[in-house]
Amino acid sequence: MNKRLKTLTKGITDVSPLMIPVVPFGIIFGVIGMELGLSSYMTFGMSVIIFGGASQIVLLQLFSGGASSLVTITSVGAVNSRHLLYGAVFSEYLSHLKFSWKVILSYVLIDQAFAVSNTYFKKNKENEFKHYHLLGAGFTCWTVWQISTILGIVLGSVVPEELGLSFTISLTFLALLINDFREFKNIIVMLVSGIVATIGYNTIPFQAYIIVAALSALLVATLLTLINLKKN
Amino acid sequence: MHWSTIIYCGIITYLTRFSMIFLLKKDILNDKTKKILSYVPSAIFPAIIFPPIFLDSTGSLDFESNPKILATVFAIIIGFFSRSIIATIFVGLISYWFLIFVYY
Image 1: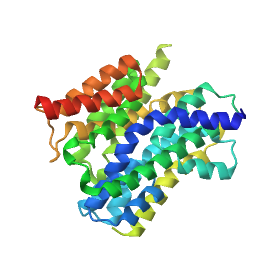
Image 2: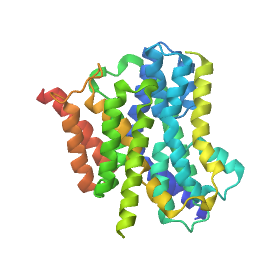
Image 3: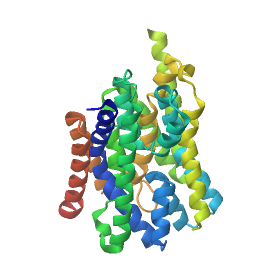
Image 4: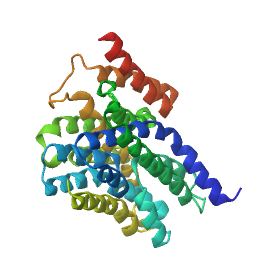
């Protein structure tokens, strides 16, 4: 098989298990959008234009709470600040690519694609077509996200709220971290982030609790790294 | 909701993803920075995971009669030993459903 196609296929198969929770996530988004009285075009348009589950859910939450456009846009920016760090990790592998590749790959650089392609890139630094892995993973996410958004729009209020499907959002992000539970330092970093976010959820304005929590946790990660370097 | 809000949010989302890939050159990061950046998922995901689990619908801490905490513990145990993403999510969701529909 052609190496490009092989890497692309690997990206698709690697990310596929992560698509199982994305389906209910997309459906939930579609259902909530309709429940809040948005048009189906607008709900679907958000999935195409923004293409980010966390951003879209935060946008809906703030819209339903009557937040201003400025607060909403600032909050989405805060939620998205994590992508800056993803990009900083990926630039090591992607900086040699043509501008057009960077434009396309940036659109699909979401949590799930980042998680699987980051693992792949670490192990396959020599593969000159490794960016096809991210292309395959990213557009698989894109397709699944759009289809499940449409499903949510169609299902509307048929899905019973009692199923508590919103819990799958937490479970999805948790599952992405499962391999990091083996290192004690990672667990400390996770606890700092989680505790700061939980306390800050109500106290930090503009829904900036995610970025404040992430920065606090990264500060701790930096200290742990520096202490470790000194020891060696 | 205005289309303009959605479009601005789309632009911000896209730019955060694009800017670092575009701006950074290959060798700009030293080993120490890379090591710190490897903690990024651990630093960000819990901020999304924790609040919906520990806070109730009014935003107050809920440790008692909270099936999500127990379901999350089951999910972590299974995930730790199986290293399987699907198993983690399914065990979490099924034990959550068991707790809310059968146990409580």
